[in-house]
Image (cartoon, rainbow, N blue to C red; front, side, top):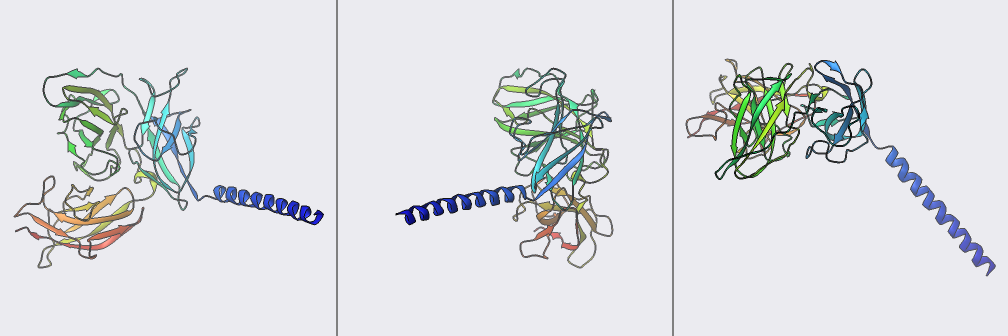
Amino acid sequence: MPNRKRQAAVRAVLASFLLFVVMAFTAAVAKAEITGTVEGKAVCQDKSVDGALVYAYKGPYRLFGGTPVVPPAMTDPDGRFTLTLPKGVYYISAMKKRPGASGTLESGDLYSFYGGNPVEVDPARPARLTLNMVAKPLPKDDVVKEGEHGGVEGVVTFNGQPLDGVVLYVYLDANDSFRGMGYYMSPPTGVDGRFRMKMSEGTFYIIARKRLNGMLAGPLHEGDYFGYLDTNPVVVQKGRVKQVEIPMVRKIEKASPGGQGRTVITGLIKDTSGKPVAGIYACLYKKADMVDRPAFVSKPTGPDGRFEVEAPLGGTYYLGARDTIGQPVEPGQLWGRYNGAQDHSVKVETGKTAEGLEVVVEKVE
């Protein structure tokens, strides 16, 4: 019996020791999780913002309404911050409450939804970005109107003044990270900065952009304007028109979104005889059937037929080319697919260039 008791005691000690080893190993693995950093600066009208909280979320479903992946980082007096995150893709935003205020985002508080979202966190290179902050506008009451439709209308502003030439992009969800032309696009705003969109019932995200090059798709570049409605997503109801103001910011990064270098696909568009074709758009699609609106579009080719189309992040895209944008492919138009892969796909890494691709276009019968 004494031996059995000693054996039981030994087994109990061994079991405790093994449990300790397993727990220590698990903790070590968790601690050794592969991480990278998002670092940068928060500014408002070109001035550093001290004391702003910078958040990282897995999705953009409600600004500051969800649980961040890690505790937020606070900016220093120079507006600088650093977030350490597990390897992955995140939506970055920032908020600074007015003195004495607490809780959710309120009118007068500063906020930013990074215009290059989502950001890829890679241990091999830090993501460097600038968070351009604006003040949340005063809320406005809905307008009740007769009819089957509702809608959203309002004004876009820059530094408190109406901004013309802004296109409103409406997205059904965040699956495409608010890239491409979306479900609907408004006409450009006039000098009064106002827009009106008649919409069916549903839930929508609204993004505002003004590209200085006049393009409707593609990453924003230095000096372009971006606006994110802080109340996204908007719920549109029959007979009610939402009244909103969208404050815009200017892109002040010289690098690509996230500061991770340009992610580019380049090549040549030619006809069936091998001659370069001018006036053709290279298009990147998210789906192999290429029937949806393209996610990213190049400038029209010049006489040499060369194209360059930029994406915010690396991945697998499906490459096509056409001479008309904004409507389905129709007979008489020029259209072609990249045939360097059976499914017309192109793979490119974030910050890298896939070059030397060729697309042959011909008239659709």
